[in-house]
Amino acid sequence: MKQTNFILALLLITCLSCAQQVESEIKVESPASLNYTTEIIVPDMNIPWGMAFLPDGSMLITEKSGELIHFKNGEKIKIGGLPEIYVRGQGGFMDIKLHPDYTNNGWIYFSYASSEGEGDGGNTAIMRAKLNANTLIEKQVLYKANPNTTKGQHFGSRIEFDNEGFLYFSIGERGERDINPQDITRDCGKIYRLYDDGRIPGDNPFINSPNAKKAIYSYGHRNPQGMLKNPETGEIWVHEHGPQGGDEINIIQKGKNFGWPLISYGINYDGTSFTDLTSKEGMEQPLFYWIPSIAPSGFAFVTSDKYPDWNGNLLVGSLKFQYLERLVLENGKVIKREKLFDKIGRVRDVVQAPDGYIYVAVEGKGILKIVPKN
Amino acid sequence: MKSTVLSLLISLLMIATGFSQSESLKNSFERGKTIYTDFCVTCHLPNGEGVKDVNPPLAKSDYLIKNREASIRGIKFGQQGELTVNGKKYNSIMAPMGLSDNEVADVMNYITNSWGNKNDKMITKEEVTKIKK
View 1 (cartoon, rainbow over the protein chains, first blue to last red):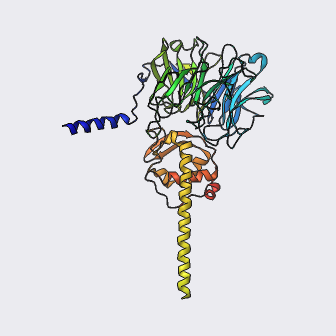
View 2 (cartoon, each protein chain N blue to C red):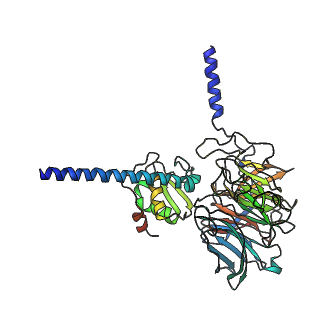
View 3 (cartoon, chains in turn blue, orange):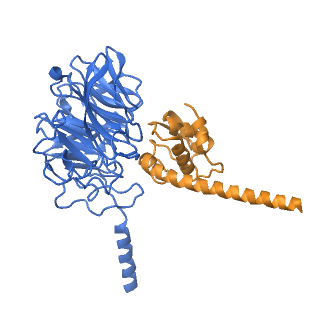
């Protein structure tokens, strides 16, 4: 009997030490009724990574392979004068964003993998430039993460501005989980904040920390590929890829540690565990986490009157399951998740454009517009 | 006598070549494993099982073994459109990874000799270089 108990206890311990994962409490559902459909606006694109809308209604689209497309009057114009782009693994030409005062200053911001700087390989760079006669001019590199590496993972690279005009961007941990994200003297696995011209704000959180990368605003991130300004609160929100399980939505706060990889709801791809902790003092909890992972990319907050039943909702692209996810928030919590346009393809980006419509960038397809049925 | 020495020499040479080929396959396999962990594992998973209906399996994949050239081309230049693996249709997109020809050969040697796959003819850089878009 004693022995049976012992064996039972042993079995229990063995099971507990396996990496167990519990699915997200809020499960994704198919919509009961959907009032919208999609129509293709820009066809024939490979990996449209980012998009921005110019005041004349035309569109700038990045192709990860290293092209910038100006889509105007139904025509694709290839923009010249791009910086040299390091295309490898998940890296290439990535996000694009207009300055909030673009109409007056003409600045366009974008992120790309670059092999400039220390070491073999590449790392994420942020550049601004202006558009003149289908060419980029006045190019300025505002930030370049170092050192370079030939690893293929986690370039991050979404760009956003807050209400005060500060520039935020993400750089993923570049496949160095145990080296980069928790070390503020190293690049990668961070959210950065700069003035729009690349200067480092004097009140950045680590400005007085010895050897710190002074542009860091928050750390302990894995690979954020979605970033938005919450129009209701002005906060910068990101979502980031987890490993197997544990993708997260985080509200960025100055100087805070978001815990990767010391705390995580995810496990290794081979099913083993790398941490027992999902929370720890001094580390931030996500607003929401996905188990299983959806591989989130692109992030939008719906305010447009074109979609009254989606007002105040979040939209997130799923690369893995190939749909657009709608998340309903209530009192700062996700209370409902919906799978929109199932099997549409790998959704890389989603943007609510100045015309009030939502546009979705889909790999292997192009740019789709979400329109009311009929 | 002379012929005995000659045949002995030839057999020694054959053993040596065999040995060096298996050594170089082993090295290529090890390098390929690192590349797999870096570039492929996210979608194809650690045991090459893929993701149901989304990313085709590499483990015991009839496509991989029967379509050696197309597999190399897919890794080298990217893959798009419908393909059938083990009787199931997939229609996704794999971006070109920006791997060198050496690295494509290494990762091919890894995936064609893992998880129940077996490939007797080692893939070389030269073979990869010859394959065009």
